[in-house]
Image 1 (cartoon, rainbow, N blue to C red):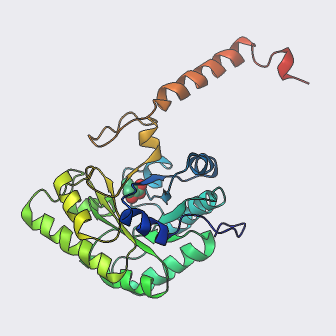
Image 2 (cartoon, rainbow, N blue to C red):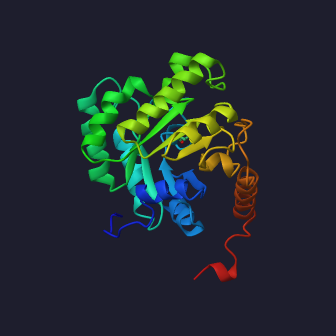
Image 3 (cartoon, protein in one colour):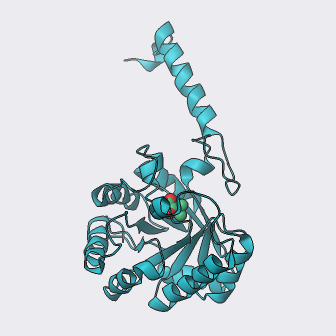
Length: 271
Ligand code: KIV
């Protein structure tokens, strides 16, 4: 339901159906009303209010600093804008790991205050107790395996994950366990394409990839990255659909020049 109380068209059941019908799922991040409204108009299936907001909205080096209240603020802005896509909200670092009671109260707070459709958590076996407890309240959960940015200090790098057999086998076991627990979908980040395809073929629930190849059931990118707003981030998996950094720079420079030269506002732009 949106804040206005209208039911959104894409549900968790609909994304399951999409996998079974072989329809690819398109997901992007959004953190604000205006972008979410345009994404809705474009026909996106799922909007992820990602904790990547910590990076692209707030300028932090990692996703760890973003708070529950900040995520709720972003999610409220997105939910207010959309009538079609499923809205999934990242549970921020420290609100669900190692404490399943806290996990339930964080997930309930997100759902109550934002009217989003689902939450996303990073990790497998380590967070399974929290996943079970959140699911027991009726809140849909999306998993996230592979590169899990909230664990960056454990891994030390943002390099490709699960290249070796041991890590790949753990990832497959975690994916199966998340499905068994009742998750409605899983994000796989930055893993070999063959492993992405293998996990997708073993699961009945959709697998959404970001740097997980083309053999999965859908794709997700961070909106700012695919729009080319931050040119200093260039992983192999990123396709830039625009160079908005260039466009913004040109528009801002022209405005500054016009103000300084007295060209703006002209006759038709004043009362
Ligand atoms: O926070 C985020 O944007 C994400 C995506 C990278 C999947 O988790």
